[in-house]
Amino acid sequence: MILKKNPEIKGSKTITMIAEGVTVEGKINSPGTTRIDGTVKGEIISDKEIVIGKEGKVDATVQTKNAIIAGTYNGEMNAAGEVEISSTGKFIGTLTQKDALLTIAKGGLFKGESIISQSNSTPGTSGSRQIPGEKK
Image (cartoon, rainbow, N blue to C red):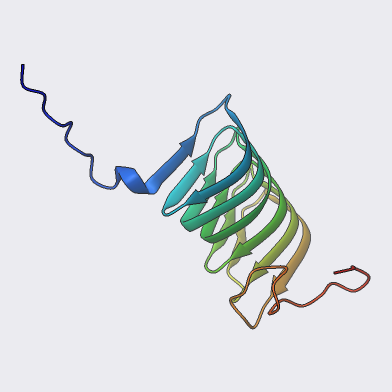
């Protein structure tokens, strides 16, 4: 019997998916797009985009280029590009961006702080500003 290697699906290596009903606790480091329909707690680094589906629940520190939030997000997010909160999306926490590229659809919720940073550094590094009253 000759075993053939399964053909690779183009782009399949750059998509990370957390399905509905799945819970992940810890750190996710994805070189591409990350889609979350389950629950994630911890830290997420997604080089391209993070998508939180309607059933997705994320309680994490996130560093990404772009974000689409249709579910629930709670935490600190550093986004280099656009952030979109859909009509079913809920963002609670701190959003740090280099440019003001935040879109909130009618019915979407943004509760927290939006910081426009002069640098590309992540929150907590030397390039970020300290929040008044917060200890380092």
